[in-house]
Length: 497
Image (cartoon, rainbow, N blue to C red):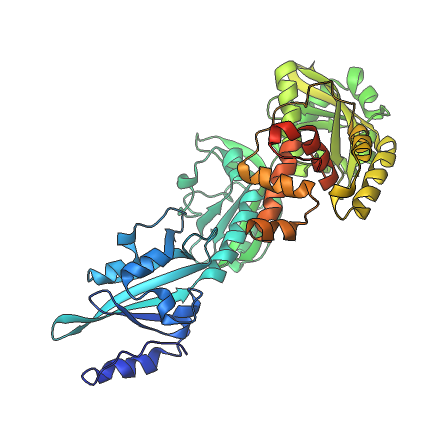
């Protein structure tokens, strides 16, 4: 196992120390008080992507030039705060968590949990010891859990079963309740009792004590202003990435559904029947908050959703449109002008199938409440021929450079009406990296080829391509090539080459 042999005849204990720690799973680095890095076991080298001690750097200063350390929040760590620098100042420390990467690399490679102590000889520092634990997998698992939990649109809380304290809360719950994050995290269930006014309080608390699932039940959720909100809650036992046993509580707001049902009953005679049986898919949402108040039979047939699964929720919660950007654009159009007509949109069914529709919306007032009435016309059949042709071209295309200008023009014509002379649509701001990726796409390069050309990871290239598609409104490489060709003079490269 690679290591530097620096023990001398007057330091036999140092040689013995090397033998003891060489095979440990934790990384160990030995540093002289003058800042020289004199020894490291194989685990410590592997945690830095090194095979030889020299790759760490001969001194602490050299290490600081070769490796960049960051705090877990992403902020760069000053070199004076590096664990090795702290040891050289005689500081001992415990449980310092840091991101470590080689200098000038795009992403952190490892997460280290470090601790350090000073060995004395005759009252003076003799050897500085840095112990490292590779926490990369544990923190990656925790980050994945955090990302999934926070991205869940359903309001949720997590209670640790060992002490019944709240350890996680997502934005959905904060929006639902009006509580602030620091008003919840760390508090006990006894302080903020979400089960105190549950319909089956005793049953819920008994199951919580056993760590068993708590079935759905209505409850009055306490709010920070002293009021309550009627919700539907349920509890699901789970294990956190740190192996702590927890209960995940999820909530559904019943107040909007109750208000929606009341409003629809009051207007049923003059509106509900026509709305419900209209042959065109229709959707009624509140203007304030964009919560779904009702849908008709044609809408349910188009999307394959059930009525109770949709009413009372937001389009974002059921992912009604192809992307959040499309949903926000629709909401913006209604907010700015009160209505729109002839807007092409991709509606997503319950199973994830995209249906191309022409959408129209109008602001209406029902029983004093401002609402948005939206209608959708399925034009999938009309688009099928266009999409089949583009798919066939894309399937055969290995390098876009062989496509003739005439074919590119025909593909552009299929995607929509020809632009007026001298116009290319709204300006889109692309980053320099996105321009480089787009230029390589127009040359027929795959994601792997682009990654190699730009010295990026394949996942990084895929993220750039996804953001690029979202910005320019493209759904495929062919559409991106057409978009770039129409704007070659603006992009600064020959997109038709």
